[in-house]
Length: 248
Ligand SMILES: CC(C)(COP(=O)(O)OP(=O)(O)OC[C@H]1O[C@@H](n2cnc3c(N)ncnc32)[C@H](O)[C@@H]1OP(=O)(O)O)[C@@H](O)C(=O)NCCC(=O)NCCS
Image (cartoon, rainbow, N blue to C red):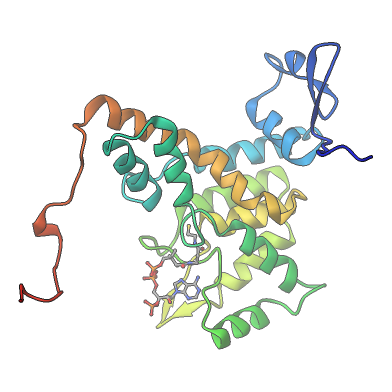
C-alpha cells in the first residue's frame, strides 16, 4: 500500500536531518542561505555563479517601500491587534498577479513564445493586445525604467546568465507600448527570465518572490509593533464618499 505522503526533499537518517541528501548540520556554517534555497528549490547544489545570481535576486527584492499593497496589508493587520504571523501572512496574501506574483505567469509566457519553440516577441505582444490582457512582468506604477532590472541584467552579464530568455524579455519590452508610454521589464519580469536561464520550473516563481520579500514584511510588522500605536485608520479626509446621502 502506498504511503500517504511522498517526498524527495527531506528525511532523517540516524537522527540527523538531510535535504536532498545533504546533512543540514554540515551545511550550516559552510554554505550561504542562497545556496540552501537553491538546493531546496532545485534538488541540486548551485555552482558559484548560480548562487551569486540567486543571491542578487533575493537581495534586490527584499523590500520596496512602505506603500505597496503587501506592506500596507501586513502593517494594518498587525495594527488591528492580530499576531505577527497573521500580519506577515496577510502581506504574503497581497502578493498577487499585479504585485510580486507575476513571475510564474511571465515564465510560462516566455517558455511559450520564446523562439525556437515559440513564435517570438511580436506574436506575444499581438496576442496580448488582442485579448486585452496585461503582459505579466512588464509595466510599473512608478518607473519608466526599473533600476533593479538594469542592475540584475548587469549582474547576469557578469555571471553568464544573459541568455535567450533575458534577450527575449528585452525584445518584448522594445515592443510594448501603451499610448506611446514604454512598459519596462519590471522586477517580476526579469526574475522570471533569470529563473528560466537557471533552469527553474515556473512553479517556483511565486515562491522565489515570497522568500525574498518575507524578511521585508517581517521587518515592517516588527517596526509597526515597536513604534506605532494600534488601530491604524484612514481619516475621513482620505475617503471620497460617493454613495447615497442620508435618507428615510
Ligand atoms: C505593474 C502594474 C500593475 C502597474 O500598473 P499601472 O500603474 O496601471 O501602470 P500604468 O499606469 O503604466 O498603466 C497604463 C496603462 O498601460 C496598460 N498596461 C500596464 N501594464 C501593462 C502590461 N504589462 N501589459 C499590457 N498593458 C499594460 C494598462 O492597461 C494601463 O491602462 P489602463 O489604465 O487603461 O488599464 C501593471 O503594469 C501590470 O499590471 N503589469 C503586469 C503585472 C506585473 O508584471 N506585475 C508585477 C509588478 S512588479
